Length: 189
Image 1 (spheres, helix red, strand yellow):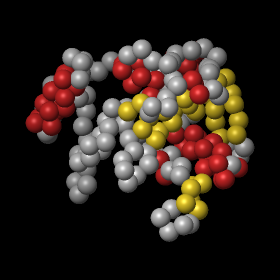
Image 2 (cartoon, rainbow, N blue to C red):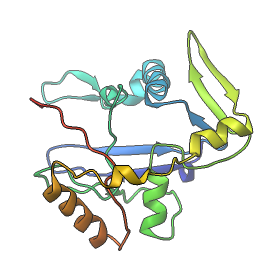
Image 3 (cartoon, one colour):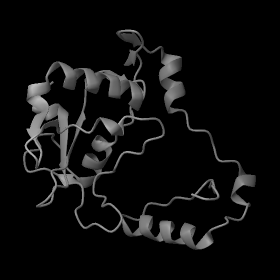
Image 4 (cartoon, rainbow, N blue to C red):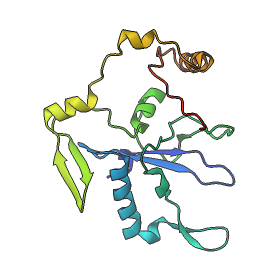
């Protein structure tokens, strides 16, 4: 892996170091974020000295956040800020990943596979790490987008103000048209 294969994003502040690395492994993708987490945990475990820093109490700790590789985890997007914070996730000055436009960088920073390529290697993890090659049908299935059924569009949203706000935000970021296809309300959350 070369430095040019890694998108390096930064949202560090004076009090907190925060960098995100998105590695582009040529011709391969991880099966999911949990599998990716197994690889990262092994990498950190096998190279503890390379990933260690001292905390404010002088204790040696890993600077790699292994908690992000869990089920139903949402990864932070390039150019976003956390709620109530002002530090956006932007390309780090040390970033060597080549990009021409912010759109190119945004797409390159997505941690999900955005390519439909026959023969793409799917990195999995069972008892030991394994690699298998996707068939053309599997590659296409990973990227098949099901059309939104019209009857879904006619169901009123329980939060029309939120839908309107999200729509306005999306349009302000480049005029992209989009709709909220479905919403889930979880009482007590």
